[in-house]
Length: 131
Image (cartoon, helix red, strand yellow):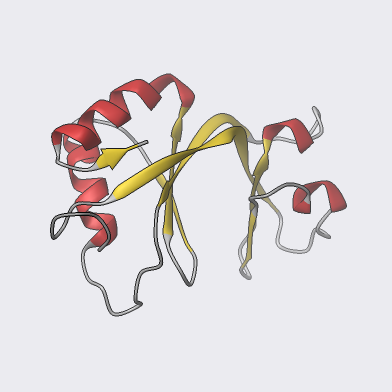
């Protein structure tokens, strides 16, 4: 984990507001979905899930809007255990739903914008740093 003390994570807030959508698995990925500094696309045989800046999302696209993203700062080794749990557990106790995305280097937590201030408060109370 990253930070000054063992188990303490530093998170930063991405500036964009995001949308999360679920589409049929056969849908072609549109160019608007891949614009911006952060997007995530996962296709399974059951669905196509996309996370992208809300400003890119066409109005007629069915999706969940108004999500904000917190990035765990630093590069984390893939063998680290408990990173997401250290973030998700206090948020779960606070009744805050998350949408987690992991990359090779780090993790991202998405929370509804209406819960952002409370999310930051809960994570700080859990000992994490939020910039």
